Image (tube, rainbow, N blue to C red; front, side):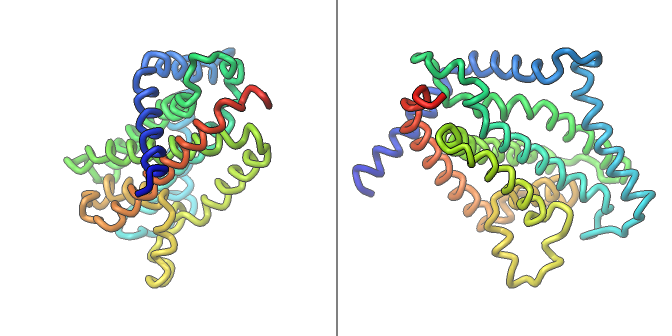
Length: 274
């Protein structure tokens, strides 16, 4: 590795350390951002529970009593689909939100001592509250189908953390570049729309020829969605897929390195355009 590459790595770790030292600020901003979502509504915080519950009930009712679809990959179709939807909804919501996060908190840009690099984390943690409720409801729904929690359920923590890192890297890239290129916001929206259909959320990877599976697996979000299903349905530990796990983390590390460098390089110029 050249000295230039080492400088990028040092820049990355200094960036991570800077964020670690800002934990109290991250907590406070996350709390404010979450509260702002329900400010002025009569039910307020209760929407946090109502929205996930209604979503799961609608999907379950439509697929169980409406379409009456057969099992998919030896699992109840509605349960299989809900488990795929939950990580996708979280990923897509945060991906879009982090793209606009610097513009949303533009009043902080001119504060020299404020680390703007923590802002994507604010969106990641704020949206995670709803996501956690989704996970709890999923476990309860699984019990209804006779799929009970086990030791494998604990590995959901691993997949959640994996998604945190992926979203953090993507957030650094899109939030910093969207300040200068407004089209980034539209590009991210289109990527999310296409990504929904290109990622096995509604459909199973077994529906396409095996020789094309590697193309689908290039998408790091597939690793997470598959991991959620392995956790809640198939009871498969993540270390049973060493090649996919290695590829995922190499991809995430590259995205994090690129994101940290891009964000740090563009940060001094934010005030010029906002």
